[in-house]
Length: 514
Length: 119
Image 1 (spheres, rainbow over the protein chains, first blue to last red):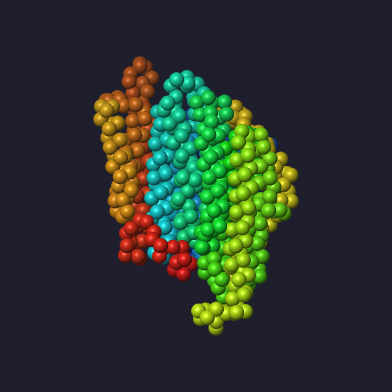
Image 2: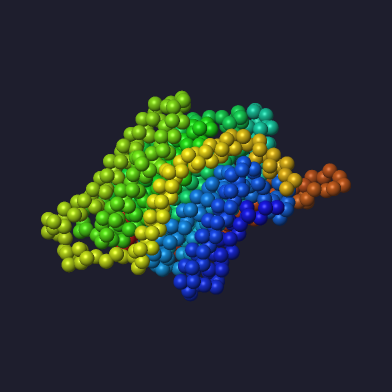
């Protein structure tokens, strides 16, 4: 058996307890091991992506139990891509957290960070529905710790809401899994696909309930509209580097929708036909609309960035809900882009908040205003989907894929108007934060009483050089995604093709004589 | 027995949802625990209800047996929900102690502006 598949889960699972138990009093060593761990994870992710890129579906049977009985990990192009994205995202974030001193403001940042990575990688790799639930819980419980990292009463209150909401979501997940198990008698995803296809159409009432419940759970994770209420308060009050890492968590929801609805409730399954098109699509359109309006209406940069995350999830889920191979290709490209862009915006927001507070209103100018505003500009371009960065290509692909859809007019209108409102909202924020602040310096307002420290405010990070390096690394990621859009799209296209021929996945898992 | 189990799940879920919609953290946490109890019983019933039956297949003859898998699932679910409840109690307690207020909703003055300063 190929043991590389389990490595992205085992590595953080060993490293995190090691950091807690051996290095708990040595922050420097924790940092070294944490960065080394993320670099190793990146290496593993590259290796497994190379293995999966050939088109084989690799199966890892835990404990060597054959498929429907034991738990399997499955590595296909989609899983490999998502693990790679996780590792690529984690590296700049861990560097930024070290440089900004966020990891020093509470205990166990690095251990929780690695537990979080373990949960995310596990969710992407598992081929078993109940195991997916378990990895959701792993990543959630780590996220509770990270979310309240650093403490403070506001953050803790937001944390209580976040935990309560997700606990409810987990319960719903269990109800969904229980229903599916009661109908099919299995929880292995490939086996589920086989059994679901065999059930006669008149016996599918419970199955449909299970499918809808499961979609609801994933929509909670992905912050789709009526279920998005947890996101702005949680992300805006979390430590912002953590919020940047959480950019991958909403994508776990999107990934799960994509996986379950191509594999188990695939395009050929009559009972759940139209589930995505009829229900997810309007919700995704509304999500994008509310995200864009939220960007325009926010009074605080962290909240505005949280709405950026919602808007990008809206665009992504529109592409997923179209449910064609072209649209899925666009969605996969956009997942990669929007994760990096959202994380970039959160890190820039943290730079701004550390220097001048987060209110979107003119204040005294901050240190390194030019550099920070340039980074904000780049992030805003990526977020809004303007050329020359990859957001433009992503949105173009989504629009192109929507051309043949039934309600193409609505989709085009919402995406284009949503992008416009996003541009206006980000421009407004940038103007107020960066340009008006300069005006305020030239004509100081009478109520500004911190003149003595304002012009020479030192950079708040202990190590601004590393912080900017981390952010520039993320920008480089976006630039690379733009420059190498061809190969990336090629990979995404093959991934979509693989997703829409679930027979190979099923035979790889169930027929396995690995 | 089916009616008993089904109504137990239903009533516990309903009571849990009622409690979750309260505004203070204590009833919300109680409601979450009730819902996790409900889901545990529900998971248990997904393997069909069988009385006095062994949890394994018999190799030699056809005898009734209980599906063992939901029991394993319930065990996992119990452990996870127990741990999660402990976490939310701790976070709620520290939120209460630091703000002297156990409302679960965030008021206007709790807006995100405080987040940067208290870090």
